[in-house]
Length: 218
Length: 218
Image (cartoon, rainbow over all chains, first blue to last red; front, side, top):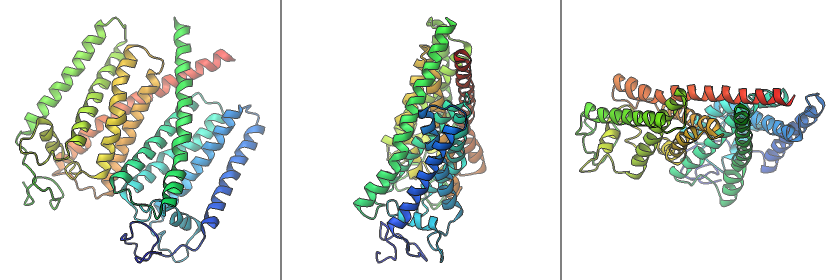
């Protein structure tokens, strides 16, 4: 804990009424990872039995979209609708999760405008659209590919914006190199790597569909 | 001109060494609109004669992509690579254009982080991708639709971010209601309306291509 009453960087960040974190790193991360795995497992099992004959690739995609959609909605929702989450007397699990994650990026604790704007877009567009993607894949909608491409692009654009604003604002928001690599780079990079892979796959499939159409109309 | 030596809002914004605007509104807007129309006209005429037998809709799209691509690259480029543009002794036309446009959003004059981050993405992705779209349409590439959709989504995401960060940061960046409606809302809304139309059209065409593919493989 720094002399300013919080563990975040930069130390001079003012957090009036900050209530210190009570749960340990393990007590915060284990339920998050456990719940995420449970969601993915449930979607995997249900998609294999629902009679929609999805391919394994499509079932994996549904797991990802269910995980990312729920994460977007629950976390962005909690952050946006609990402005006092760092000073609540009886902190909830989600309050504690944000206290832990802020060690990798104190702009969450400071409620930086760029972060709030990103979370507004996350809950307004990316979260609901991710859950819609689960439904679209399961029911083989013709808009499934373009929807997935759109959400991936939103996630990539959001990450780009997230990293560029951090760079411009001083690039000093992590409590130690461990939190820089584990949270700021590590945790966020899932939303760079997976959307890049899905977007590239969608791009190829969509281009191939138009090539086929061109050949047909010749 | 306010007592702080500049015409922008909020008045207490500090702009050290600010060199007042010399060109009038007309002298700034007329060349911009004239050059934009010239670019569009040139693309329209060339695309009608180059033997690529593009439809009128595709030729109109090429005009838009050429206009928006050049605007993105020239303006974002000037803004990013001329950090002293508000204090240069011998201001260029582009310096004056940013001085005028800042009357609708002084975050340009203040070099607000959100604006700089948006301009980084504009010059790094949206500008070059817009010009690539002109080529892709002209040479009927199979990735033409998905590329246009991607750039539109980037533009819409950028506008959303632009407006949300302005709202969060105080929503008081225009010198008068005229500049609010003409520049902040009016000028920016082109990059909401046109990308929405093109993205909706691409979405429909891509969904239709997958419907056709599904029928074929039944």
